[in-house]
Length: 314
Image 1 (cartoon, rainbow, N blue to C red):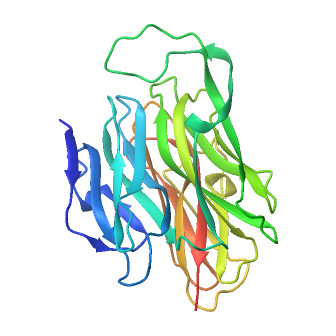
Image 2 (image 1 turned 90 degrees about the vertical axis):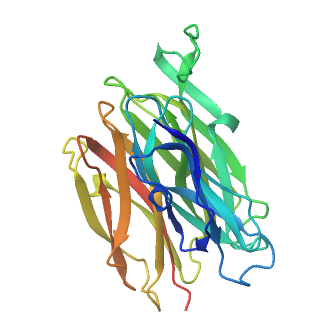
């Protein structure tokens, strides 16, 4: 039986990470799981901007794959973070990664891209009903969108090339033996003035909606590095494994050991079992770190990818 909402009123200090298992056990799924996060005292003079993405997902295949990561009630002292699901979906557990910046900062820009606000390309052949609901609906015959895109222009052009980090933070996908979980968030066509954000599925994936956050900053910003990694950097999609790991080398050696924040940007897993995927980092040094993408139980992880940002201010 699912609980409607579980909220832990006790605040804890910001460390860039949140897990539903801080609030409840995996065996007690809820539609909404939340708690307050406190910023370092006196660090902000006004509410900062936040960006957040999933770093772990454990969702039942008995219903649609639905998860939403929310940061709200933002003040200069803290905010509420929540991970939610809805309808007939059962979310056992999930983790999120988040980062904040001063509202007045101009060298780093945060944004959000949602399929609800995008242009899209429909599937070429298959048609299907929209997302499952508790009410019986007539089958809709319009093509299910496969690719969503939107152009973003920066408030002010950057003076140098820009990096854009993309993190998934909302999912609404079909499940079933004939529907694998496939989604990719990425940015391209980037320049000093803006970029195009994408949320895509492919093959037998069925995407009813999704969202991602994006983080844009100068490519050669001191004390900051970023990038992407994927299981396909190590192995082929046709060689699925429970765990895939490798090392990343920073473009330049940091003066101090940096904080590395990472979240999921691509999923390709079998739809005949629960969606179970986790990204983590370890062995962080001034030269690089080790990443791991993994699944567990009877789930099959064909491929997965994540984007990361490293912050090493002396």
